[in-house]
Length: 211
Ligand code: AMP
Image 1 (cartoon, protein in one colour):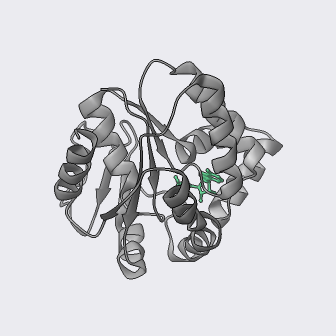
Image 2: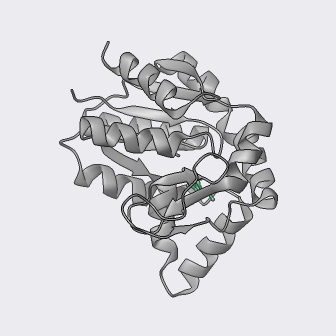
């Protein structure tokens, strides 16, 4: 099954968790622009420092930087279906993605919109922990665990605090939410209740993809 999907969702909605599950089940290519940018941040120069500052504040990074990283990753994985996690984040990025898809003769099969209320997101963001080795995502309010199942240590993302969250959420409302309209008109947008158990949401997504 080669399908290409976009996760359209607010910060801490669970899109990363669902994307990882899909990647493992269907052997798809998981493209998280947040992960690509965090990798780029580790550069020990002015570029890396600037990027770190922007991400820490919760603002969106320049389209041109994100697009370059995204294109590279897509071109390296042309043979598999992809899951876009955190991209596009605004209408300009959606237009650039349309152009890229035309160039490589691909299309988006589903845009999955995970709907989660703000108060739930706030709680999730402060409890979120990630594995240093495999990147698996946990939540201290749900998972009674101090190490990952792979043995890796858990850490908290530096932008997973309430101050950054508020900014990330505002960016989402102003710039990303208009994409719901965009994909309602131009794509196959499916709304999913993201305020549910991980397994329940995953079942819903797999039944959509298997259709
Ligand atoms: P995420 O891992 O998706 O929560 O993204 C973390 C941060 O990376 C965001 O708050 C932005 O600063 C930046 N970022 C990720 N994806 C994008 C994107 N498509 N456009 C602009 N900035 C992005």
